[in-house]
Image 1 (cartoon, rainbow, N blue to C red):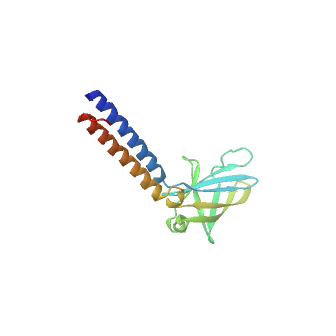
Image 2: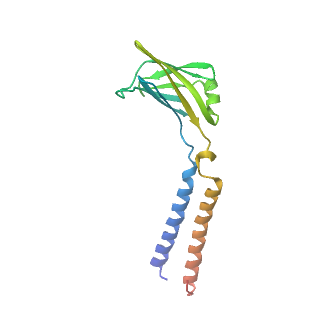
Image 3: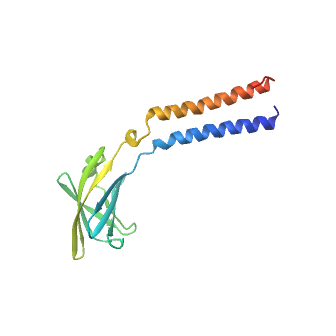
Length: 169
């Protein structure tokens, strides 16, 4: 086996290992926690992020953003006002004490009170929060992928060593 063949073979084995490892990492990303609340007049879509609960509000009939309205969100009997952020066109709730129970795994019922000019509406929705382990990829599946990647590297090394010694693979 010459150097060029050795290089190609090793590169192919490494690409296989990298592909398997990259696929194994896909399950490590936490799913997005989100809420959808719809009425005849308005639609609200929100997601829970590290900096708070971010909510976008649109008109149901035209998908036109509802900007600079008053939005209050109630959870477990406690209500908090969302702050409109004109540069993002969304509403943010950053109250850490109010958000703490929302970060627990499960489905959390929310009531949104929206006042936009002369119009007002009550929207309800559920914030769906799940942990990494409930995202569908188990630790056993990840371990199997790591094992497969390691095994492919070992097989590649054995084949290379056997060829260098003049043996048949």
